[in-house]
Image 1 (cartoon, rainbow, N blue to C red):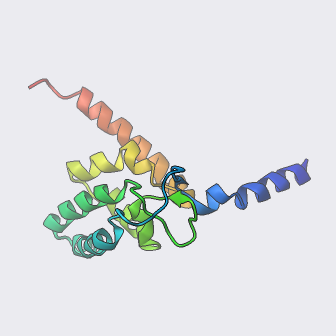
Image 2 (cartoon, rainbow, N blue to C red; image 1 turned 90 degrees about the vertical axis):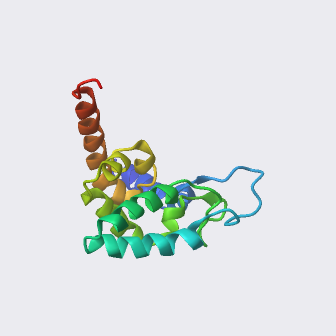
Length: 153
């Protein structure tokens, strides 16, 4: 039984879909990173990240807005993705974790709503999914509960 579990683990580890992440590109997609906003978006996101990190609330609002724009997949592709497309955020490489960690600590309504969203959870992969997925789902439950307890306007 141990051999079978090890074999399955090795197959999963080297599965192209898991190495590449994202999702398989549509068969008719021939060009990548044409409409992907990463080249223009990620430097702005990084700038706002650093300003927000030191407490600039306006930058935090901009960071959340830019983060939201970095979530869709567009036609983004990293050098090793081959025929997969990924969220623009993933092109930030190692900074992605820093951005996610900051978003998880922000308390503005827009940040909480984004962190609690299925859209946000869709960009989580691997260890980030293990760490932030449950936190995001709990945040979604708290958000739903708080919305259901609000008095009508």
